[in-house]
Image 1 (cartoon, rainbow, N blue to C red):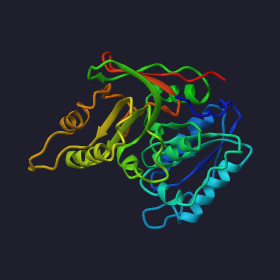
Image 2 (cartoon, rainbow, N blue to C red; image 1 turned 60 degrees about the vertical axis):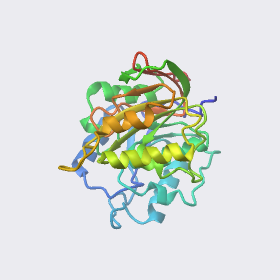
Image 3 (cartoon, one colour; image 1 turned 30 degrees about the vertical axis):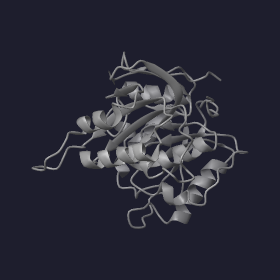
Image 4 (cartoon, helix red, strand yellow; image 1 turned 135 degrees about the horizontal axis):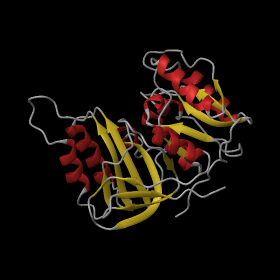
Length: 301
């Protein structure tokens, strides 16, 4: 069980680049507010060209979005990459993508559709951050913002408290992401090795039957067979359709995950709801399902 390479801690004055690898940008005011949060910490924040382009529901054509990511990743002066928003599109630019691991690793920060980039980078042996994108960051409470800065600046993280389902504790490498995006990575070259991981999953606007369908796919594929524990964040606006017989999303999660014989903790404060607590991808974590605690160990540099 080996943690991935952590990029060097960020320091005031470091250069961060903003990219739009997924959906078309709509929330310009929120973007501006979030950029100012980073700048108020002393960071130099530069917006990559063409982030406001649109090609259907995407933030420009695949080639342009791929070029943005490559330019930011290969820039020797850049220390972190901030993603504008989720939506859909990051998997499209990963079809022929190869991370240049000879480049100094840098922080990649985002969630939702950015899951594909986080997990792809994980397979290349580099840690990243499951955390708010720039169209949601400004809504985060102070403690959540501080947690993100603590993570990327090399300070310890406080444990997160949720609802433990019982069954003891487990230690593994934390792999956080959006359930829908992660499900569509199964059986692709982007799917990481899931042996000995603590899966941290969340989702938004998925009806309970669709959550059921995805988790059933995980079960049938055998993808959960060597997972050590499951940490569940918010499942936001996942109510059943009106006037249609249904389980609740909570009942579905219990039904599909409660019999796996591994620790499960639900209702942790990350995902599409506020707060969306930052989680490192690729570091060792302990999940205690008796106390309802997710505890993360980030090595000091």
